[in-house]
Each structure stands twice: as structure tokens, then as C-alpha cells.
Length: 68
Picture 1 (cartoon, rainbow, N blue to C red):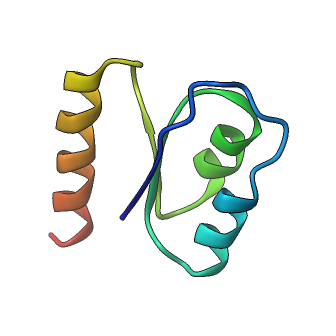
Picture 2 (picture 1 turned 180 degrees about the horizontal axis):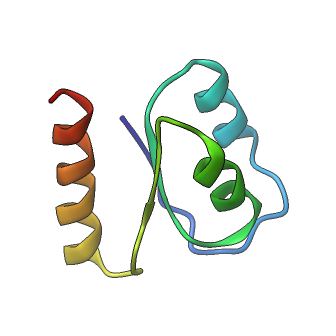
């Protein structure tokens, strides 16, 4: 599971591309082009709020859901 923690709206992300190419799960905040790609990715999850407590809780829930 990868956490793309950028809070800056990027127009492209090589990291996101590599993670998707490796078919790994990825979480990110809803910012910029990486978020748009992650929304369409079956192993992707967009965190609802830029808040550390929310991020930890949602990442843990996403991780658990992957293995249910």
C-alpha cells in the first residue's frame, strides 16, 4: 500500500504512474492530476480530508478492505 501524501496540485506524477503500473494499492488526497487517475484505478482510494487523523483512519480502513 502506497500513500501519495502530496498536498500540492500536481499536473502529472511519475510516482503515481509507477505505482499503478506495478498494480499496487495507492491512497492520496483529492488534489491535482494524481487524484484524478487514482479515482479511476480499482486499487486506488481518495482520502476525504487533508487531516492526519482522517488520513490514518481511512488508510487503515482501505487496507483492511483490500483483504476482506
